[in-house]
Length: 605
Image (cartoon, rainbow, N blue to C red; front, side, top):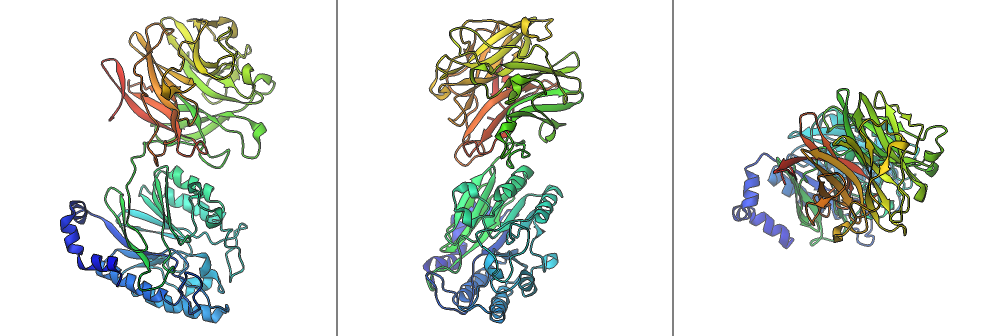
């Protein structure tokens, strides 16, 4: 017997008594299940590290452990059987029947995930007819079930790109897809209730982990986007890659189980007991080649929003929120359409009733005849004045000629351009002439326009300001540059060569500027400065107000481009963008800010 397994069998009670953490978990409501994958049972010759005939003995040992533990259920993640050295349908079915009979000796509900080798020599309907999932899952290639108020969703990636099933070995295992009908079903399952979700699948979904694309679902990015957008998925548990793997992104753990088939007895096997506690932390107790693993439930922010319509993955930047006619509107930058870079950066509009759940309600694209914005427009700032939404935004793609523009709307969705656009670009030896990242606020009877610009060498990004009278209609002629130099220039190491994305909060007789330091993913982080006149600014700290996340967290690559929003009840929220993949995706979130002695602090931190 494997020494490690013997220790676990003989000392289980002692282990619990000596480990307070384990003992505490014993007294909590929890769910436990047995996990195996890639059994590949067949009566055939050894091939490399694959010992096909030994798999039934390995499975028997695993089930012995599972039955003693009195688990809630057992699941295998695909490739239950293999085929003979000379493939033959009848023989393959006999292998399947033999290993399925052993699988059913588990004393409790059992579930199957379809693997690519399960369709070697036989059809998918034949596999399903010779295996038995518990309850309503019987005979289904994909399905869901609920245990202990956790929803488990089983996916079937064994389809060709045209949606047809893998069949009797006539397929390319490196091209596995989840077809449209199953994707729609998945979305409905995720919307059906508020239960946390664990996904089971054979082929891998975490393409972002650097794993070979041959091992992954062909449309994995689309599926992952659906999972991330739901905000409900705790973990994805996978097979297929016999060596195993682990990754983490946007609050979802991706655990790839090691294959049982690999290596010879008595020293080699692979199975696990998986425990999920009341806080949705996952503990994997591995046996033999499967190692122990703890996957703690990350504390995700209440909101993660990303527009998926343009590039197929969440991608929203530069948030700005207003409250208008009984609902919240968030204006943000959205990227060019996938495969069509000429479509340019545009502005997306999302709507919310609670500042947490957002729905896309519109886009602002280049206006006909507006040559200044035909290459793109983005980085919006907005304010409500006289029952209208005034939107300030930058042109994009014109280099040093990019400038600030203005538009106005009666409904917050459809905007009419200012005929004097562009309304502002800076002048003087201190700037290259470019203006981006507009923020407009009213203070002491005047309107202040904060913008980012670069130096003559196009190297350093910094902040400037212009002013207009209180009765302005925001036309070009009303704006006067207030200084001949930068009002905030990068000086601290974390700011790098960039200060941008200014957002202003008014508190009493002072203004507070929340700004982004460093260029995107450098990492960009958020700082705060204060001013009594809107022109002279002093930082509150040498350190960031909001840092990027730790490795593995959703915002490990950056926490940037802030927007500070004060609601009608006086509560303040910091909206900002972030990602953990160096900008392959972009999410927007928010955190509440509280004020103590006139200074801002992140609530709960």
